[in-house]
Image (cartoon, rainbow, N blue to C red):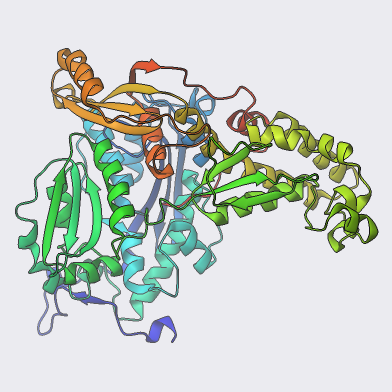
Length: 588
């Protein structure tokens, strides 16, 4: 059914007016409104402790672009982490000579003065702008704000799109500027999406700014009547669970302020179809108060994996892992396996992983087989010598199929074995040679394909490398301010053993940190040393811990053992090889 002929997926909070109207009653047509679509890049996700690194904005009137704003911003305290560098392509070196937010913010406020602000997932961008105003003692102008995520959920339903991420909507509407996770490109893409959404709303007779403000998710009044369920939720960090009449867990979430977050599910601003359906079925909200936000995030992952709530998508497969290994054969092949390594089952060759899904491991296997020629077929050596496989005829299989001896073949795999062990230098040299060879014969598309495959391979394996580094550390104790720039809020202290959160505590005054650390070491969970290269918990939990440790303001109080990354590892290779693009697409 064409989108313009679908029944509306929303209600309006007020009905169209009739009768004699005054000038004050006349609404503002959308084509007469000035919109400023803005996108930010930042050092992290939390507006109170992270900082803006780039602002991009597009000003439009009547569907025409009348101005653009773009600048890098030099953070004053926060540091751009390796994770954010990979995500955005913005490095600490790039912003070293950029103006600070003191110089940039007044210019942006003047550029956007009097306009309606638009952003994709507006809470993030507007939250950072508000925080910057508060730090610099500027009054926030409190403009009208539109969120293209919320608008899209009303008029671009599933399964027309699989989700409402910026990249998905940009592809769906075939925007002229694809999102690249750089501020101006993303602002341009968001602006194009906004005007496509206006066309959709126009087919339902919604053509003014005021009418757009009355749009509510279908059935919102019925859900609002359940808001009493949020009455006793504490305003503390923790995990909240929505339960149905039989006390079955429908959905699990986490927040640093559970009371504020849970209330949002019952108001008209909740536009996610699955969530509105879930709230309709909810009869009770249960909570688990946690000492720290980190503990809340970790407990959420563990509870979702254990209870498998039907309305959660993320973390439900946290326990399903896959590895990439070389088979124990005379001519080893790359293989994806779900069988974890064990100390009592020594293997001839190292393995890469674990990965969160078999699909990810398979993608890396396919990429490696396109970069390095390895044996792909399952024929025995004798059979392969008699009748080489079809892949060998296309140059895609090695070993006995092309007449190699076992010694020659194993020598050829030296760089691949090193890569699986965490040293990417040799494999990168092979990739460079393949790129040079393709360019020398004017096969530039092939050279670009090899480059992109290598970048994708390294980006994917960096996370594995970082996890393995943390798995090897017997104990880390670290502290982080509860609220950036607000010492009165105290600090969160975490005890991490072999990559697993073993305990955490909130400390109101820094003088008590040594006392709390001693208590955590005595009462923290005992974690057995895992098999080398593996962890004692879900990979998603370890990733949460890693991100927490890498955030600005985190202080290492003590480290037992050595926490390090290989000098020529995958992260080193990504940032020194020239394969990393200037920007990369990532979900919001």
